[in-house]
Length: 318
Length: 183
Image 1 (cartoon, rainbow over the protein chains, first blue to last red):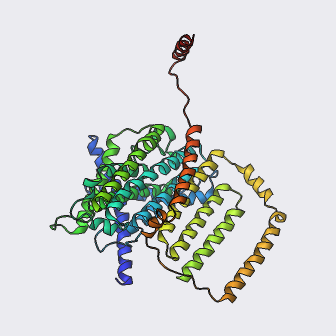
Image 2 (image 1 turned 120 degrees about the horizontal axis):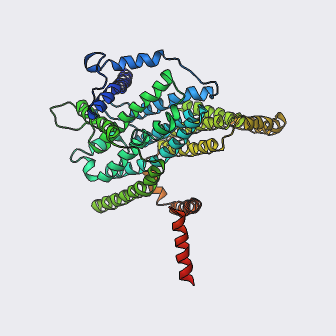
Image 3 (image 1 turned 60 degrees about the vertical axis):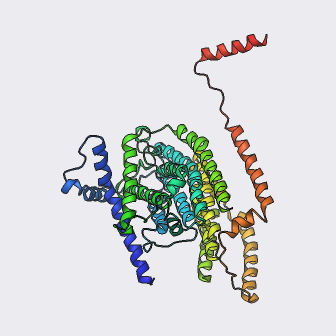
């Protein structure tokens, strides 16, 4: 591939991702409304799709305020971290056999590294706001994300073991006969739960828990700085969905009547909708319940899954 | 590729200097993260991508977050920053830094004079790492396991729950039963 092709791929991926993240504002509000027997946004444009534009304009024209009691530079830096780290993770996602920014040989480890850096946006944002609710949210976020990161990585190692490679391209190709969801169902469930906790989406949105903590770590944020957290969350959903599809549901693979990118898009979109359905249907657990489930149930389960996978892989290979 | 090595080394060193000179602990920790990212880039430019990503996952992504967590818990305000500032008097740092600069000059001289300045570069195959960890260095891995286990046992002991009573009457009753069974 020439340099220009690489540049086009990077720009194209960036363009599509940012538009998807913005479009999800509308999708989420509309789907939530549907599941809750309401109409949702339906005035601006056909089916209310221009709510995306209206929301963005509103965010841009709001006063961009840094509280005088906040730590100014860290306060400004924090929202950039979440968007930056999530966009960096997309580097390794193979959208089709050709459209991939870089098929690194540490592949999935790079994704884990970048998602572990994402925690700084919450921690720093909450700390720099110098507000007790923000600080509480930040502390919850830090412990939640560190805890769930551990078995997020462990659950993916079963798939890596079966493939024998960290490269996402190889992992997709290894699923030509059978998707890994059939061989690794436990890993899928653990990974998805950990993914929800990593993106701190409902039901695991205890870092922002608006009924207890105002808005948690981003209570003090307004304007486009809040918008960055907002976009970062939608990008995070897209990322977790894309990784789930790549690791467990065969990525771009599918019957030949649709091109590979369409298969990838369809599968990813199904998971995004599942994220929204979870938000519409599940209550938020208590903080200690979340931590106990994580360390006492999911971590041993992930280790057990890894052990059994290793044993079976060893037996089959002889 | 040598340029990548030198640039990331300079970033890492500059960030480390900033870690030492910051008065606000969280700012210092942020620079420490940058320093770890710089070190990860050094590993990457030397052809060790596995170590580089582990450096980010473990150090930048987990350990420093725990440090920041502790700093947030301690709630260090303006007073501690002022105290830090008082501790950073020139007389405390000038002596060691002169000595260090002498050593640095010597090192630079060696690099310039020595001739063998090429950085050996070979990409480490990912599969080699676990094979050597669980082959050649198995005792080290097991000993590390012992150490970590000791830490976990300690943490579990400190964090043990006290027995909860739903109501004080229940507590008395249980004590009474206990007492009667003893006598």
